[in-house]
Length: 88
Image (cartoon, rainbow, N blue to C red):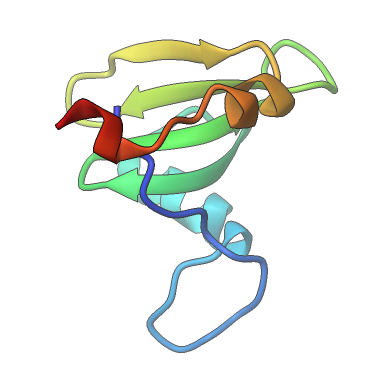
């Protein structure tokens, strides 16, 4: 699953950031307890706080409603990232 960028934390014209999560969640109809990290069209990767104060990392398809768990923690997610060049 591609993860090409991580949204920043600041505000800049025409650039999405983590601070836009509430707006984007409403706009795309995503679960409310997310902090969105990255997007590819209607698909999002985000921190999922629905189960408690320590988030898991999930993949969310706004069009189909499909959700996939990617990692039990942000640390596990980062440690599992690989160079896309390894896939040809």
